[in-house]
Length: 380
Image (cartoon, rainbow, N blue to C red):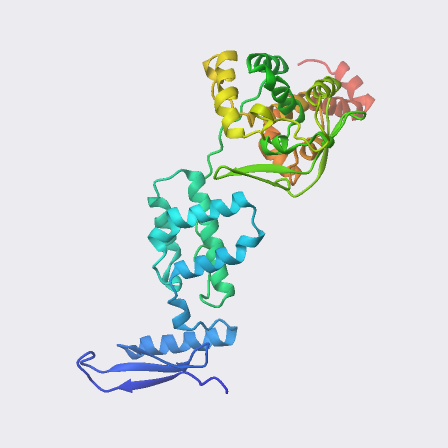
């Protein structure tokens, strides 16, 4: 059946419209006859023109679909997305929906939520900037799911400005400070500190390493797994970028790891917690790492995090003149732009020799006659 052309019909005066009203009758996206009533003829004609435009563009939305509560759209999005998510990501999305989105916006019709409303919602959230950015990221995905399901015509999150990210300051240790920290920590975790600072691996990647990942002859470590703690349960999976990479380690670390794996089998974990149990980063961080930081350093370094050992590795490599692409591959960044965005400022000292080299090129390119002319030019 062909879609009926929207028609405008004048209504008789009634108690609702003392001066009469105007009605637009058309077939919606489900080919169901629908009526909308307006006070003035101009409003009716404008709506008629909009319906015709939306139909020509394939954007006609059934008003009943647009009235679906946002909570239903969000739950359907989560159920669709859940099978492809890691346990940590799934738990994070669930927390954002339950703690922030659904209590405030859950009952709102999905088709009536505006960009201005979302901007106000984010501004009034009493949370950190990082949480607000994560909430907006989830909202954008939820509304896009509604667009794909033909529940709403446009995603209201498009154009919403995310709060400006406030990156946590990075701390970089020198090689001497790394040794000081390693000497200050509980002895069984000394190798762990040195390994983190000289490998640049993430905490979850280190905790998931098995003995067989270490090639003791070549001094290389294969990074292919990571572990996360979600609700007290450990989940082993792929790395953050789903890539396998090889990390070369210096000979002194090879020797320390040889001692580390004594009496262990190939599938045993390289680093463990008490009594050989899997290393739980939260417990290790609170009970061993932070106390060691306070023992080893003055107060201005007490904010040092375990993740700063990864930053330290990047800093040490940059100081040795290692190319940023090699550093990006070692750290497991998805692109070199991430490496330069985070550590580009550390290359400042390497720019001075470049300026000297450019000066040399310029001087060498000058004609010999110009120098002699300059030498005999009389003073006035």
